Every structure is written in structure tokens, then in C-alpha cells.
Figure 1 (tube, each protein chain N blue to C red):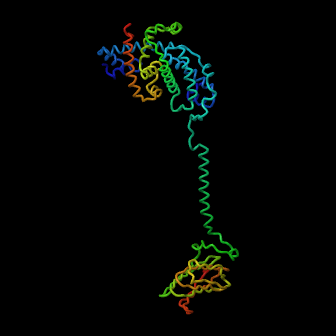
Figure 2 (cartoon, rainbow over the protein chains, first blue to last red):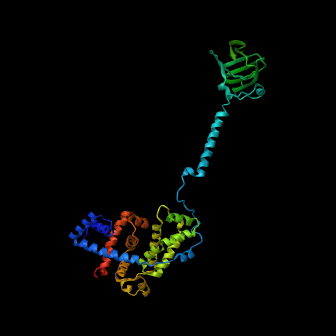
Length: 258
Length: 181
């Protein structure tokens, strides 16, 4: 049995793939191994015969016959794949989709920065008259003062803020028995725009006049008072808390501070 | 002018160019015909099969994978078509019958006794051995190209070729191919 590696070497030699040193080595191996030498001779003969047969392959001209038998289209089912696959970045659809997504993103970005903030634009006071003022800007207003009163019977807080066009007070009352809260101001400087019961029960109420706002409270309630800032001049707002017609707390808040 | 690459021609055919397919036919018809002739030893069948191979290639061209070489794909079609046809027709000519080949074949090809014995021995081999021997010795393909044509690994090609060579030598011994020297 001839070694498999030697057989490989024999074929490499027959195909002319060995250099001079390897050829010499093969020659020596064949001289020592008669079986391998016989294999070499046999394949030399086979190779020569095949080569001769290969060269004898007759010429043929079948183009016309084949072309006549061909269908009109190779296949209509599949588009040819391009020889060079285009880079995804160069594909128009990809680029347009990137621009589209970027446009939407920038749109949202611009909307979120410009529209809800609206920090610099102030509506003229005249436009606020008779309209329900949207108090989303409360957090951006200047704080005038935050008054807190607390005794055994009553707990109250007045958070007063102002802007150039509006004064807003957020009031929290907590009392077991009825108490009154009164907010007094100069009608030449301020004018009632809106009074709101944010969280109020049926035993409480809020009412307004030209120069004061009165709250009748019982229980835990919250109120919002919005006043039109007519001239943006410094002005004091008085705040009183009364129980059984007797003032139990009195203080003042300065708005439009210089 | 630099001749066009096979894959470039295939691409043009897929875009509707029949003239590009004609170039491919001219380039490979002799090789395909020669391979089929070696396997069938029948000129008419080889001609007929060569035409079928190109027509099949044309109609299946959309499935051609541009990663591979066109000729290995074409050889694969040719091998499969020929093996199928031979299986269907049982068109094997024994060595005894080889002497009865038509005169026109002998006249044109100068077919010698050793040629006939090799053809007969090849026909006696398993299809897988015969394919690998034909691709290696009649077409001079490398291990890699044979692997691509037969869709097997180059290591397997090496193994198969080793066994095919031994089998062919045994068959030729049986047919007294070497005894004439």
C-alpha cells in the first residue's frame, strides 16, 4: 500500500508543481519503492492519454441553435443583482429618510423651545381683560411674598406673585369653623380678573368686588385670585383673616417692587 | 479590447442582452461539449445536452449567485444534466461495444485503443468519482474550483480525488490498459 502523502507528491510531480529539490527527492523515493514507481508510471500513461483525448475534442458551433431555442427573457421574476453593491449611504431612499427623520426631530425641538416657553413675549394687558387667563406662567412670575398664618383653629397661606400684566395669589385655607379671608387693593392699580375655587366644598365661597376679594372658608380649600396689573407701579395688597367678624390676622404684600 | 468578465456578461444578459449570452456560449461550448462527450461517448447526445445546458443556464440565470464563478456554475449544470440523462437512458457503452463505434467518430477523432479503455473505465466509475476526475484532468480545474463546482469543501475534493484516482487505476488494470506497454 502506497503512502497517501507519497501519492499526493506523485501527482504534484506529474502536474509539474514540484521544484528541482522536491523532484529529486521524489525520484529517490520512487527508486526505493517499486509499488510507488509503478503507480507513477501508470498515472503518467493515464495523464498522457487524457491529454491527447482532451486535445482531440472537436470544434463545435452551437451558438445559432442555442440562441434559436432560447426564450425571449432569461427570467422576469427577479431583478438582476448589481455587480457592485451600492453603499447604503449612497442610496437615495436612505438619504431621504434620514433627512425626513432629522426634519421631524428638529421640528419637535423648535416647537419645544419656542412655543410653550414664550418667556419674552407678554400679552398686552388690554387683551387679558374679560378673558380667562392661563396661569401656566405662574412659576415664572416674580414672588411678592408668601404669608403663612397658623393658630389652633386656622391654617392659611397666601402665595402672591406678579408679572408686568398680572398679579396672582394662590391661597390655601384650613379651618374647622367658618373664617373669612379678605384681600384689599387699590382699584386704580389693580382690577379683579378672575377668582377660582380650585378645591372647595359647598360650605365655602369666594366673591369679588372692585377693590376687594372675600373668601368664606370652612374646611380645607384652595383658591386662586388673579388681578389685572394696570400700571405696574408699586402697590400694597392688604390681607386679613377674620373669625366671627374679629380680625385674627392682618398683613400686607408689596407688588411691582422696583 | 479587453474581453469582458463572465459575471459582467451575465449581468448584461439579465438586463436583456442576448449578444452577451452568445459570447458566453462561444467561450464555454467546446469545454462543455468535451466534458459531456467524455461522459457519454455519444456525439449527438453531447450536442443535444450542450444545448440543453446553455438553455437551462439561461432560464436559471436569475438564480445565479455573483459570489461564484460562472464557469463552475455552468459545469455543475452540465454534470447534473449529463448524469440525469445517463441515468434515464442507461446509455453506457461497454468496452466490448467500444469497437463498434460509428466510423465517423473514429475517423474524426482518431480514437485509439487506450482512449477507449479510459472512457470505458471512466464510465464504470461512480458519478462522484467520474465528475471529479473529469474536472481535474479534462478541465484542469484547481481543488478550489472543483469544490465550487461540486459545492463541497476543498478537503473533501482532495479525499474524493484520491479515491477516484485509485478506483480509475484499478478499473484500467482490469481493462488491461497498462498491460500493453
